[in-house]
Length: 165
Ligand SMILES: CC(C)(COP(=O)(O)OP(=O)(O)OC[C@H]1O[C@@H](n2cnc3c(N)ncnc32)[C@H](O)[C@@H]1OP(=O)(O)O)[C@@H](O)C(=O)NCCC(=O)NCCS
Image 1 (cartoon, rainbow, N blue to C red):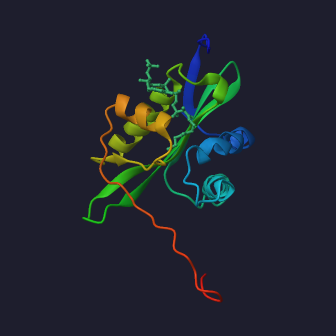
Image 2: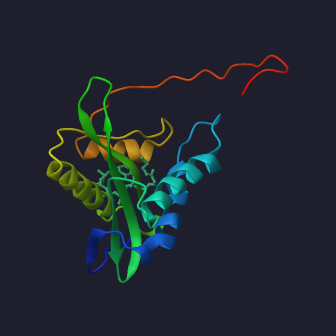
């Protein structure tokens, strides 16, 4: 059972948070489909985040961290993308709270900060994807007023010998 922190701060990420943010990314394979490589999921998230930390700041968008008692215990990344119907929307790329800090309201506060960022950009929608097996995240988003918009189906195909990518 978690205990509440005395004080939590949500602030834009800094260079010195890099290691902690990369550690938090390890949780991003939660509930991933059995036909996906969980390490590749985590690696993809880390690469996006590394681009954000790069001196040339290769990524647009924003990354915020939650800190408690001097420790980074959560992070969220938010960016923009264009929906196929045309409008540019805000998009949550990564959201993770340290296992020892869940159910204290940090996820809620991080998401709220991403929503504020999106509003400041003048964007009307904030969207995200989560794995079908990640029931915790689905309950979390539903509790915060997010509504399911699309469901993606995948069929794993048998390959003919000598073909495939
Ligand atoms: C999903 C995640 C970010 C939630 O963060 P959190 O800080 O624990 O969430 P909060 O404490 O702000 O919870 C807000 C509300 O969400 C709901 N909720 C959160 N976790 C839940 C769970 N395990 N089961 C049911 N409801 C849950 C509750 O309604 C909760 O309010 P309450 O605690 O007052 O009942 C966190 O579990 C996490 O980091 N998971 C691993 C990484 C991940 O899956 N990220 C999302 C990928 S898209």
